[in-house]
Image (cartoon, rainbow, N blue to C red; front, side, top):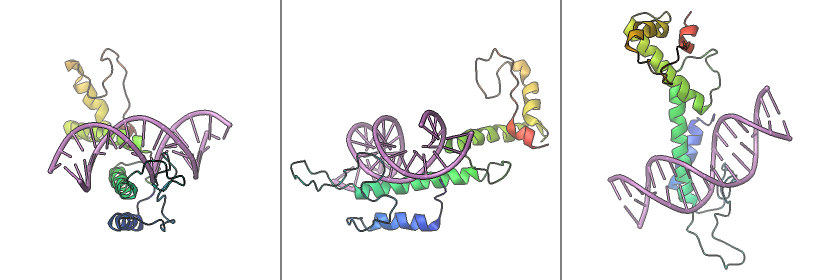
Length: 154
DNA sequence: TAGGCCATCTGGTCCT
DNA sequence: AGGACCAGATGGCCTA
C-alpha cells in the first residue's frame, strides 16, 4: 500500500498512454519482467526457437492502473473508518471487515436512536425474533459479540 | 526465520 | 478485437 500519490497515478497513466514499447523505463516499479510471474514476458529469446508471445507491456500497464484504482478505493474506504489512532495501518482484509462492522454499528445507531453501545441495545431489542442481527453463525449460540465501535464511543 | 501482506505478471473468461 | 475483471503464481518487504 501507501502508493497513493498523484505522481504514481500520473506515472501509471503515462505508462498506459505511451504504449510502453520501450525497455528504457527501468525506473518503473517493474516494467517488463518484474518480481512476479514467469518473468520472461519478453518476446526476444536468444535462441529464437521459442514461439513469440504478444507484448504484454500494455496489458500489464493497464492491470497496474486497475490495481491502483482498487487501492484508491481501499484508501477512500479506509478514511471513513474511525480507528485509534486515526492513522493506524490497516490491511485490505481489515479494511473490509472493519467497514462492514462499522456499517452495522451505524445501522444500529440509527435504529436505536442512541450512540451509547447501540449494537448491544439493538441486539437485546431484537432478541425475541430469534434471528441474530448480522454476525451469522449457527444461531443457537448465545454469545454476545462486542462491537468494536461501541467500545470506542465511551 | 517464518508468516503475513503486497505488487506485479500472466492467462483465462466475459463483456462491449 | 480490445478492454475489464479475476484468480493463480511468484518474489520482495516487513515484523514478531
